[in-house]
Length: 479
Ligand code: SF4
Image (tube, rainbow, N blue to C red):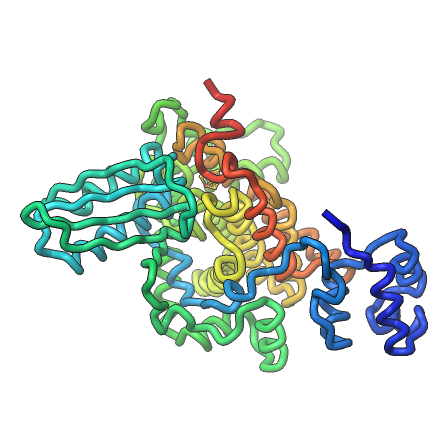
């Protein structure tokens, strides 16, 4: 692949606008030496600066990248829709939002549209076929279709799917096919029906990037949670409060249990052990890590057992955000109102990732699930601690940046290894991201929007073996 010739194009741009290296550098916020290095081919400008140049000088990206193969964010996807945050937080049973909640919702819709069928058939494709057994997709569909019979087929061969999590549901009456719908389980329990337009409330938000939202908030002197309530209406508060109540319930339930998680891995539950064990000379830092991890394990274990959890943004990654919120509520005695506001901010972050990239492990790997959960937890904590908009953005950006490339390879397709422990690690990382953002925001170079685009690009480039197919990584090597 040919690399972009920034040297020639930046020199050309300067000439066209009659600028010295120093003048161009000043406009971009870099030194004349940096511009000189670009023009001599010693280094390349950051993508953010290229976007800036395009904006300032009325160029499109082709001016810099013509003849090269580079990733350009999918504008269609970027502007498609930004739905209510209710789509981020779904209360339901685990273990997987895309593999159990989504197909369950699809089955309910189909049943409602074709109530007179005497039997149904579901055909699972892509990741749904490959890890559907481990995630109990077939069980979830059959149970939802009861008392009618439903047969579930796994098609491992289909290619050119509209989404890695695709399923067909077909209804029959007296041996004749009477209805057929293709569903896409796009992550977080949300489904789309092929060929059907978005509903009105699926494009609730007028802004689709953090940059736009930040600008609006600054102009209107409001915080991110106030922005959410302005768009969604005050009633969103009660919804998020119910989400918070369920999150706490799940943690308390998970902490109280011991034993083995169902499934052929024989994984021991560890939340209770982590919560109750401590060394006599335990430091405050170790205690913090142990507590946060125990809360994340509690949710992950409940999820793996098919108990009730809240997607945040998915089932597999549902432990990160509640663990951080629960720990800080206890540590600093924050009110439920404070936590609800933080959760509103977190949901906005999850919503932006879902709109502009993906929260689906099957589509973009675990960076899309755990990475997003970590960003949501970081933003929530930064909001809770009263940090600025830029600090909140930076905390969320750090969280995703350092999950880039994270693969999804659950052993036997069960949402257990690496998923449960990964929630704990991400919860601890979210706290670290906030600590860093507290000190380093002024020096940052990467925006939240840019890292989200990068995550999407990285996810698209990931081999399918690392996207919830149980065909690579730990899944492949574990015997
Ligand atoms: S590895 Fe990550 S993305 Fe994959 S199922 Fe587990 S938590 Fe979800």
